[in-house]
Image 1 (cartoon, rainbow, N blue to C red):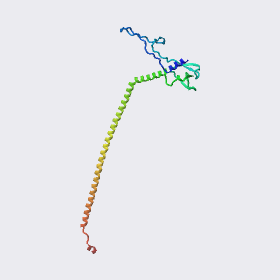
Image 2: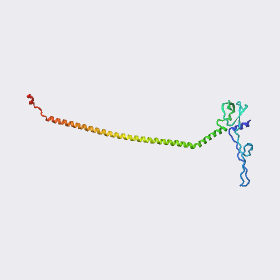
Image 3: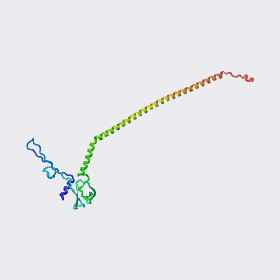
Image 4: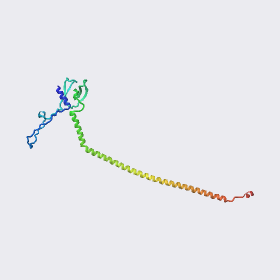
Length: 231
């Protein structure tokens, strides 16, 4: 029983028993003779001394009916299988899980949170497929990004040209309005000078006319006092 538990715990940790040094047949001191290669073994029974061997991932982990080591074994499960957690035992040495719709108990040390075995392989294969797809579509994505950036640059250039033309038109309009303002200012100043000149001329004419009337009044003969007494 102890040896079986050791094998199971060793398989769950993903340990590999590797023995290096493949057997190769060496030709006799003849350089023209091709190297003799033994075919790769398909079964453990076909292996030779020194060949590499791995722990099988199909090692079974026992499923029990209660959280004790002496409980009845009712089923088994492969390394890396995905199961559902239910609860821990009071001594925290067993875990109740759900597998294929049924509840079982497994040893705490035989479980882990991170995927392993076939589940890990599936996860890595999914990532590899995703990276491969991204690599295959990299050129098209770059081309699409380039086209989008080019279209955006062209749009910005058009907007810039439109803003420049609008700014130029506004500057021209401002210059025209400024020229009109200066023209009206000059006309207004000229009109004010004309009004002042007209006022001066009118004042001079009025003064001249008053002077003439005053002179005339001085030289007009006045009636004498004798005539007044006569009547």
